[in-house]
Image (cartoon, rainbow over all chains, first blue to last red; front, side, top):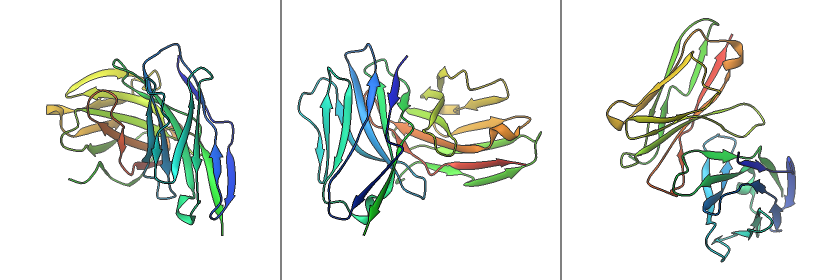
Amino acid sequence: AQTVTQSQPEMSVQEAETVTLSCTYDTSESDYYLFWYKQPPSRQMILVIRQEAYKQQNATENRFSVNFQKAAKSFSLKISDSQLGDAAMYFCAYRRGNTGNQFYFGTGTSLTVIP
Amino acid sequence: DTGVSQDPRHKITKRGQNVTFRCDPISEHNRLYWYRQTLGQGPEFLTYFQNEAQLEKSRLLSDRFSAERPKGSFSTLEIQRTEQGDSAMYLCASSLGWGGEAFFGQGTRLTVV
């Protein structure tokens, strides 16, 4: 079974600084997708960034980037130049490749941005 | 159609009553998911539809839970004989094709008293 682990229940960062959120996963598959979702206090989850396992290049979306280490099964999220609006719960998620139906989520990391 | 919509946003019900939630996915999305989320936890998978076919159900989905997606459009999730342990946020999401990310609705918060 696939599992996703986020070992940091809470993190904080000073505004304009950089923070890294950790995620590890367990799978025997070679084809899969990884995602970081953000859930602000309003509770609607929105996609931050996605990574295809077959791609060696780390995904980047503006201030958000990932460090994807396939052999180590690690998928961390780096937020640069943190802004107050980045404060939220962040969930790491895994989905199998072509036959994958469900998304597996970690327990989340609550990020606080300190002005 | 700008996103996934769920109705109602909040539902308070007495234990033992039946409740039904509705989800309208993004119109071109063929895949629809239901998740349950309790406070401080990540979403837990309940069930998945591809078009109108329910292809996967979690063991979390007891026989009191039933989901439908007639005509492959909107979906309903019904909980019969609600229990206090059913109190949670019920999230609906949709996606398109293989590898597509899931787009989530704002959820329905159920409180069973």
